[in-house]
Length: 398
Image (cartoon, rainbow, N blue to C red; front, side, top):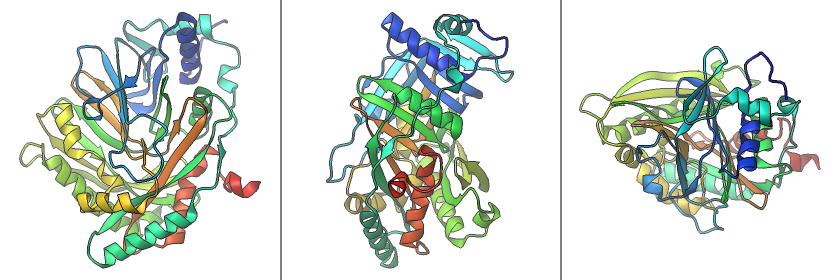
């Protein structure tokens, strides 16, 4: 294949890397698209992602990069999640896309131009995979959970909680092709692709969980959602969404405060309105200084505040009884560590694909005293619509 003079797209390079790994008998590549490590894309050319201890997924390594995910830790009585609780891998090569669109190779990463010359194919950027075949989620169970949550708020047990539902379906294309099609149609700030013999993660999260640079750490929780076709100013005017966001900001401050240097926890951005695929969000940012290692930092803040509730421990206890299935990776975290630096996304808008083609997607939202069960259900569908290209859900079109 003749390599074009223009910069290589992440999609064409990732496809070529995937073919290279198959040809050479290597573990598949991993990809982080959007805003990772001050780059538009970070590709790990090959990384063996193996089942790991959830509490040590992001432990530092003398290798160049650590890649992995950790699932939401609380189990519910329903069926088992489709993916392992955690995976981790280390590698010595990384490719990053520079500001000018060119690629930079680090460690033992191969020459990206040579990879595409040998393994690329004409039309790689134009391939489109069909959307997963989704079944209708359990609306009645979600309605009952929201109703129970509202009663717990009225009785003073909690102030708010995040409740989820799960979509179940089957992939109609390979996981990589599905990921690349969705990533092109609905680019997200914290997209990621992880693959192994255990299955695949197709992450399209808009939400930053933890970003660590030396002793500085920040977290940017999302609370407050509005469909993309509505005026984003409505978010700042929503009593429910603003209250929801501020409560979670306080929870993040508390979590970081457990390991932060005294007096260093600061809210640097409050109630910013930012776009995401299919929706607008309210986002705030909390920063701190800390000298603990990554294991201690994650232990103090996991699971992410925005997907639990306040008070955090009681909300988690109640969620286990309200949701009929364990969340799996949904509401956990995925990302990478380079040296002592760490970048993790909250695993929302994330497809979990089993090796046999089964796929699940968790979607949810924060419940406050002002919540309406029907409106919360509509928000779940708005958040899932990026997987089928928007419009009515596929089970309503049959």
